[in-house]
Length: 440
Image (cartoon, rainbow, N blue to C red; front, side):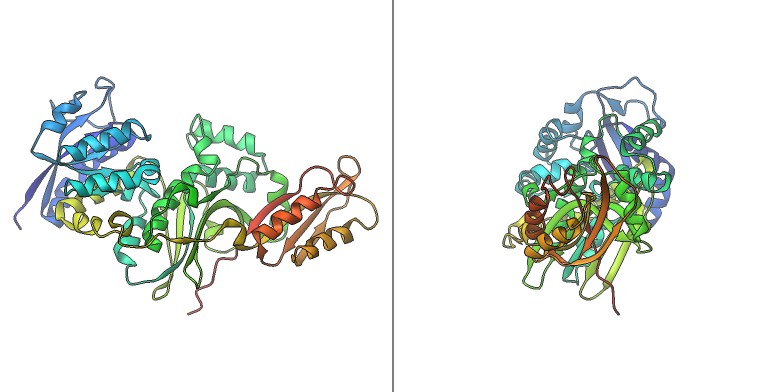
C-alpha cells in the first residue's frame, strides 16, 4: 500500500496536545499500516515554548508564531486545543480562513458558537471534526453520525462529566458531604481549581447540545436545555434514597416523544441500583442510546484525560485525511440547515417521577395535608418513608416518591408545600429517572 503523508498543525501544547504528539510518535507506524496515511506533526504553536513537556518534538516544530502555521500551505489540518470561547473562536475562524480543516475538543465553542463555526467552514469548503469534544475517548460522535444512522433515536441518556460523577460516587461510598468531597477531588486532580462549569451542569449541557443535535437531527441552542447542577446536593438525600434502592447521578437526558417533540435537560437524577448507568462510578463517562432498529446500546469509558482525549483527536485527523469527515460534515443537519428546527417540549411538560424530602413538623395531620396538596396538583404518591427522631425545631424527615407527573404540577405543589406551619425550610425535590428497557 502506498503511504500518503499528511502534515498537521497543532495550537495548544498542554496535556491533550502532548498526548496527541505522543500517539503520533508511538503509534504512527501502526496508523500508517492500517490507513495508508503517515501523519506528520509539522508545526506546534504555544505561547510557552520553554517548559519541558512529557514528549519531545523535532527541532523547529515548536513555535509561538501562529502566523507561521497559518501561512504554511503544506499543512492541511490544524488541531485547536486552547479551550474557551473567545480566543478559540477567533482562532478557528483564522484557521478556516487560511483554508485548513479544524479538529477541536472544544465543546463550549461548538455548543455556544457552533452555527457560526459551521457556516464559516462550509464557506471555504472545509470541515470541523469534533469527536474529542464529548466524552473523551468514547467514540460517541462517530456512533451517532454513522454507526447508528439507520435508526430513529428516541432517547439519549448520559453521564458526561467525570468530575461530578466522581464527587457523587465518593459521597455515596464514603458518606461525606459535598464540600468535603469536592476539596478532596481538587487535591487529587479530579476537579479544577474553579469547578463551577462542571458542578453547575454547564459542561454536561455543552456536550448534550452537540450530541442531541446529532441524535435528533436538529439544531440545538443552549437555551433549549434545562440545566441544574449538583452544587446543592445533600448527603442526607443520597443516604435516604439509597435505603429505597436508588443511586444519584448527574444525567444529561435527551428524549423524543411519539409526536416528535424533543426535551433536553441536565439535572441530578436517582436511578435504580443495578441499572447500567447507576453502576458507572468514579471519573468515568457513559452514554445510553435508544434506536428503533438497534434497541439500546451503551458506550462506556474514560471521559477525559491526556491519552483518552488525544485518541479521539487523532481519530478525527485520520477521518479528515481519508476524506470521510469532509463528506459527512457538509451533510450534518445542524450544519446544512436542511432540517426544520426541532419542536422542543417545554420543561414544565415533561413527565417524571420525583423524590421529595420534607422536614415536617411532628404533629397530627401533617402527612395528610401533604397528601391533599399533592393530590390537588394531580400527583400520586408511590411510596413514603419517615425516620424516627426529632430534627431542628421538632421536625422529622419525611421522604415521598411519586408516580410520573408533569414538572409544572410538581413545581406548583412544591410552592404550596412551603407552608411554615407544616414544615421547616424548603422541600428537596430530585428527579427519579426510569430509563426505558430494551424489551427485545
